[in-house]
Length: 288
Image 1 (cartoon, rainbow, N blue to C red):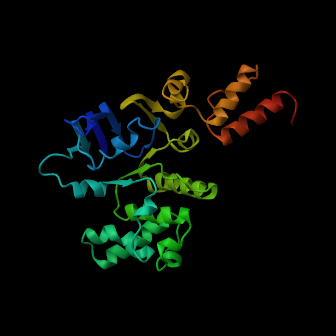
Image 2 (cartoon, rainbow, N blue to C red):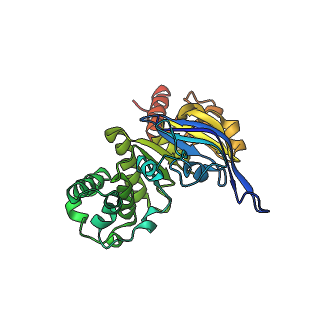
Image 3 (cartoon, rainbow, N blue to C red):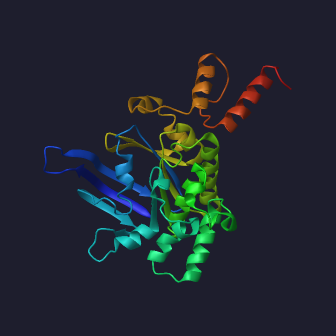
């Protein structure tokens, strides 16, 4: 499995009056080929957790293993770990700095010491993987692009390192609806076509319901639920206690059920809701 976390604890500013426990006794496995959503209210520890996946933070206690190797063993190079586990922060376009799109996406591979032919192939492949035309954008300044395109360039820079796991922290924050939809479609394509293992941190119940197959729920630095998306969204009381909710279409179906309508209450997406509502209308003779 790509990532395993064992008894992970993390404290900010240990040994000071400002010490704060952010993670407590986390045990978690991310398996090959999964699309995992991590949800939780602000301050629940989501971002702190994923920064342990590639060694940006060192555990106060516990272990993080990538491909079965403890990443904090003396003989392990964190540079190699970070090539395997690509981490995309919130607003990754803020990390763009080169004069051209090509140079920005090539920055990581070039630091790996690859030859120019390999770098060029990786840049082309990475840009195409995020839905950008290599020839059309390679010589452009990344700062001339739309917000959604800039974000895709930033993600391409991570993909050019050819990681086996892609971890994204609120990747659609601040994008307009079109940019959000396009980026989410590209994430789906990366997972399905290129078989990336994807970990998505999100505040949007709609996004994780639509994309993820498994949900991890965090609350006050602990994992309080972990399972298939549909099963987790059935845990209504737990989700409310942790300051979360369910997708709006699920709320709609629950309200219809409370009013005596014969509908499924585990609907998670607009597409599923459409099918269910048409079935209901047909059963009531309102449409043929």
